[in-house]
Length: 210
Image (tube, rainbow, N blue to C red):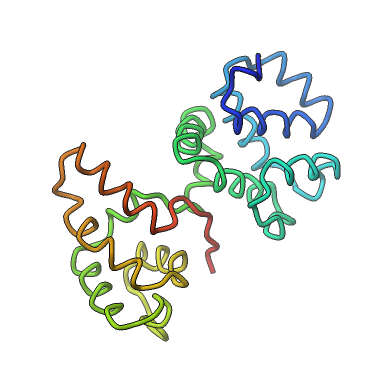
């Protein structure tokens, strides 16, 4: 496999995992040659690894590659490390790899998906819940202020709230029209609406279940 032909972030992910141990490096180099399947395999393997067992040198490598990640979250399991890596990859890269994991490693996908928030989740919110949400944040500073002490009945929105609770209401309100009309838009229009929303909402983020 020629790392020079890969997307830089995929290549760095490959290089990181290949540095975990020599046995894995030899096996992966010999068995897999396509970058997409290779990256899916790497994340799947990482998700099944105890992060505490990863060599210190490898941790230094990954910290240089992904400086935006919060590695305090990754001290317990490799699953958390895999989530952090997915989080900082560019949107099209992360979606492509996640799709490949679903195909090649369905068991790993089932472990990852409940911990991830995707843009598609926004579209699952009931219109009545969405209307109530925008009404509630009209005169508040942050989303958290608007829902202080509130108990959510809608599970999807509860997940989203945990992610956007510290965002300013003024920013979220700018996306109200796009969110309300999204289900009825044509594909080309939907892309433009999504682009605006993604600049405001956090796109693809691990969350922690209580």
